[in-house]
Length: 116
Length: 107
Image: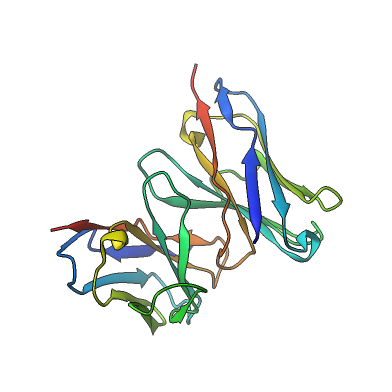
């Protein structure tokens, strides 16, 4: 069974940085595009970023472009999301999900709280 | 950016009744449309992709239809475990976009 486990969330001050990780297992990670989706408290789902299997192709939402970098280490079966210049509106549960189109597998999410 | 609009925002349904949820895209997404179910404190669960194909393990009471800009998710006979929030999502264009969700609550 595909497993995705996020980590790295926490409380951070506005303007700070955070790197989220997603450890993947039980599938061929390097063959799969991967995606980050976030959900602010009590709000809907927002697509954040997608990366191709090799890491060569990346896509970003306008709301995070320039502040966020998606990357992956295929030798470690791990996906990353570096978020800089954090704002209050970045407060959300961040989910990693498998694939680039629709998302059949999700992690449990990691909470990022941006507050003074 | 393709805007996905779901209606209604909240749907009150009695167990055993049919629920019909709508999703409209601001431009055609062909059949590149997925539906998800989310319960409190849980990650979303894929129900439908390709507008009408059920994902693995999804009960037959869930069905999807539509193409272009108008889509429907139908739950033929609501079970207690079906009360949740439902989202549509297009994957025809970048950025991927979700609807704002429809909450299906017990009447």
